[in-house]
Length: 149
Image (cartoon, rainbow, N blue to C red; front, top):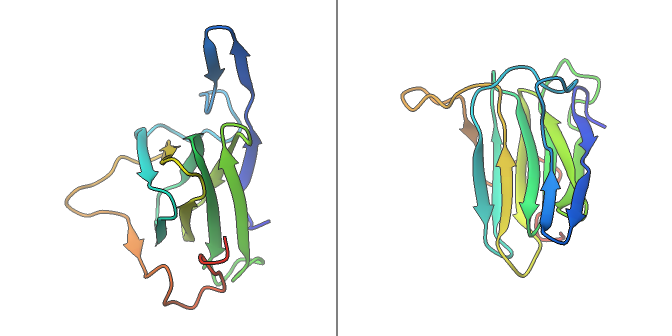
C-alpha cells in the first residue's frame, strides 16, 4: 500500500426504506479538516485520470455504480515511490480512500450505469489558482493500463 494512503471500510445500513452510509465523520482518524464536498461522475467505460494535488488530501467513496480507483505515488522521497494501488469502489464494496498530496489518482467507470464518486477534500477549490495538476491518462510514465480494467 502506498505510504499515507488509508482505507476505511464503510458500513451500509439497509432496511425496507432504503440505505444509509456514513462516509466521513469529524471524529474519524482520517478526518483532517473540512474543505468542501462534491460529486464527480463518469459514464460507462470512461476514464477520468490522472491528476494530483500539491497540498490537498482527498477522501473518495463511490455512492452509485462501480469504479476502479487507481493511485500512483509520485513522491520521490517516499518508500513507495512509483508504487501503484488499485481499488474497486461501489456501494457493495463500500470504502473510503484517503489520498495524500502528490499521489496521482484517477478512476474508470466499470458499471453499465454512470458511476458517482463523492470527494471530501480538506481544502476548498481555488478557482483562480487551482491545486490540481493533470497528465494524460494513457500517455505518461505511470505503469498502469486503464484499458485492462
